[in-house]
Length: 309
Image (cartoon, rainbow, N blue to C red; front, side, top):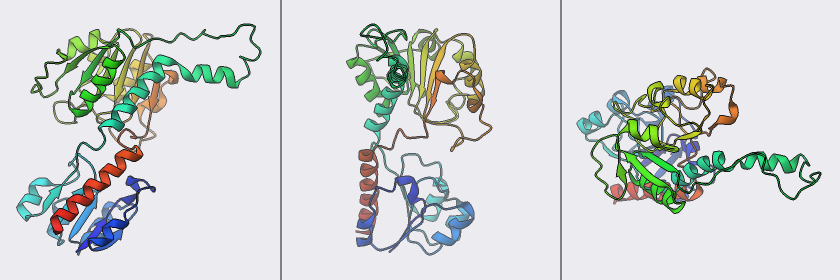
């Protein structure tokens, strides 16, 4: 079996792939441009891709038998045509729940705790020149009794809800599909959730229902000093509307780990906000703890091994 990795760089340089050599002939490419894909997979039996697109043209002009997606999302593979061609497609799920939840909490705590202000105070030698033992001129707040609204109560949303509860938050959620009947937490409308929450975190998939779901209308509903976190998918929040909201007179904070187009484009309106202290943008790291990426590659290896055996 010939096994081809198309975008190994996305897995991190600290992840070891040597075990795949026990399953067949392995070719590894750090990155792959659309113009390079067909040449690299033409005689491959198994293709492993994270974000490289495998479409109808690629399938019709190659001998691919198995496509392993090194991620949960499958939008980079034409699943319908794979079925027509008899090509098996395997993704992985559940590997990044703890990692994404941890990043969610980190983004919230950044805005609640104001640690950067206090670190800077000490680094600039202000504390050593102070005439009192403490410095609390930048107010920070407790999570206790805050209302935490969750959009998308899947495995990640549920994990975040559990952590929020441990901070004594009141947890409510909105189901984007309308099919979640979890009774442990209070289910509410999107309008009520946006109006009543001190913190809103997004953990839903991107689809026709959720695309640009959080726009000016819903952003303007949010409380003064509310925090919005998106670790779900880029495109769920209208980025032009978000940029205007951040620069509005009403204070509002946002942590973003996913954007509609990644990596971030120079023209993205979020690059041009004036109130830069109100926004954090991280480069899609939520899924990527060391433990998470090792779980991911273990699951990919299992998918390849099961197919071969």
